[in-house]
Amino acid sequence: MSSTKLLTLKTSDGEEFKLDEAVAVKSQAIKNMVEDDCVSNAIPLPNVDSKTMTKVIEYWKKHSEEGVSKDQLNDFDKGFLEVHHSVLYDLLLAANYLNDKELVDVICQEVADRIKGKTPEEIRKEFDIKNDFTPEEEEKIRQENAWAFD
Amino acid sequence: MAMSESAEKLPEDIIFDTLTRLPAKSIGQFRCISKQWCSSLSDPKFIKAHLTFHSHKHDEVKPILISHVSRSLHTVTFKHDTHNPIDAISRKLNLSDNMWQRVVGSCNGLVLVLNEEDDIFLINPSTLEYRGIPNSRLALPKHGTSSTYALGYDVVSDDYKLVTLSHYEGVSEGDLFCTYADVYSLRMGLWRRLESLSHHGGLYTVLGFLYMGFALVPIPTILDDDHLHFSDFVTLRGCIYMLANTTDQDKNDVWMMKEYGFAGSWTKFSVTQQSSISGFTPICFMSDDNIVLDASGKEKLFIYNKKEEHWREMNVDGINARTFMESFVSPMIGKGTEGDASPKEAPLKRPRRSGPSSDIEAEQRAESAPDTEATMATSPLPDGDQATTSEAPAYTEAAGAVPASPNPAPKSDNLDEISVLQPGKQLGSDIFLFLEPRG
Image (cartoon, rainbow over all chains, first blue to last red; front, side, top):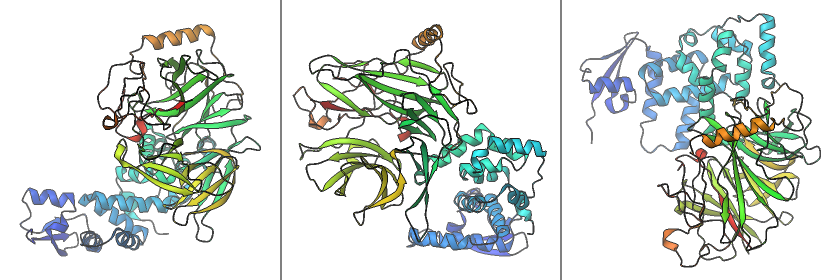
C-alpha cells in the first residue's frame, strides 16, 4: 500500500497538526505543494486558525474512511454543518483557501439553504450591506420583481 | 446579532456560487438588497450560471396544468411535510384573459402553451413574462389538420426553437402523406420550413418529440409481444420514459431509458392498473417511489407509489399537466420581428401578424441562410442485428425504431435513409421523432 507519510500543518495561531498525506491532499493547495516537493517542514497555513483546521480535518478524515455508506456520510455532513453561521463562514474561507472543491460545494449549499428564506433586510444585516437605493428606486425594483414577492 | 467578519471576507466567486443555488424567487427578492446585488443578480452571466445549476436538479421541477373549468394556467408546489406527504398547492397564473387549451412544450423554465384558438404563447411561469408567437405564413390551416409541438434550446446558437409538425387528417392509405415541419427561432423571430417528410411506405402518426437538434433514438425492441403499443413518452429526472399498453389488463408498462442514447438500457417497470383510470401520463417524481400522474379522463392529478403499488388522488384539479423549472429565461430574447408581446402589454387573444411583405422577406432571409437544419429525415430502419428483408419496419406497432447513427448520413426524404443532424451528448439538445405506423 502507499506509504503512510505524515504531513505537518501549522495554523495561524501556531498550532501544529499531523495528518496522513493521503488525507491532506484533499486540499488541492496542499497536493500541489506535495507534488512540488516543498513539504519537508511544516506547511504554514496563515489563513486558517486551529479551531477551523480541527473541523476541516474532522471532515477530511470522515470522508477518507473506508466502508462508510452514502447515507452515513450524508448524516455526518448534516451534523457537521450544524454550526453557527460565523463558524460556517470561517470553514468556507478555509476550504476555499485550501482549495477543497468538494468541501466548498457542501458549505456553499448549506449557506444557500440558510439564506434562502431570508428577507432582503435580513440579508443586509447578515452581510453588512448598505441599502443604497432611494425609496423610489427600491420600489421600482420591487415592482419589476413583483412575481418573487407573492 | 453580532456581525460575522468572515462573511465580509468571502470572495466574490464564492458568493456567486452560493447565490446560483438559490431558487428564482429568492433571487428576485434579493435584487432589492442594494444596487450592486441588483446588478449582479440581473447579469446574463449569473442568469446562465443559475440556469445551468438548476437544470441538473431534476427534483426541482413543478407541474403546470390547465384548470378544466376556468381554462386558466396553474402551477403546483409540493409541500413536503411529515404529516401530509402529498400536500400540494395549486397557484393560478395571472397572465392574460386567454382561455388555455394545452401545454405543449417546456424547456429551461419556458413553457409553450396553446390557447383555445390554437395561438401559441411562450411563457415563463416564474417571472410571468409571456410572448405571443405568430403563426408561420406557411402553416397549415387549423381545421382538418393535426399538429404536434416542441420547444427546445439550441446550444449552438444560444437560441430557443419551437418546432411544429403538422399533417392533414383524413388522408387515406396509399395517398402520399406529408408531414410539414416548421421551426421558429425565438432570437430571430423567424419561421422556416424544413423539408417535408413524405412517406411512401405507409401512414405515420407523429407521436411527439422532445428537444432540439435532431437525432434518432432506438426504442425498446420487444421481441415477445406483438401487441405492444406505445402510447406516449415523457422525460422525468433527465431520462426518457415511454408508456406502453399491453394486452395484460392489469398492468401498464413504463419503459425507462436509463442510459441516454443506449438501446440496451431500456428497463421496464409496471404500473398496476387502477380500475377507473384507463390511461395516464407520468408528470414528475415526488420522491424515489412516488410518481405524479396525469390520468386521462380524470381532471385531477394522482400519485402512484411504486413500492406499494398504490394510487392516491391529489387534491389538485386540472388537465394536461407538464412540468417546468423555475428560471429567469426570458421569452423576449431577440425581440422577434414578428409580433411579440411584452409582459406589460394588454392581453393578446391573437398574436399580431406582420404584414405579408415582411413575412416574405423573413422567409427569403431564412432560405438564404446556411442550411444547417434544413433536412430532417427519419427512417424506421430496425437495429442492425434485427434487419429483416421486409419493406415494412420490423417493429410491429411500436414507434419507429432507429439506431442512433454517429455519422451524418446523406440528406434525403427517402425513408430508407437516416439523417442525424446534431447527435446530442446531453438530453437537452436532441429531438426524438417518434413515428408510429398507422393502419
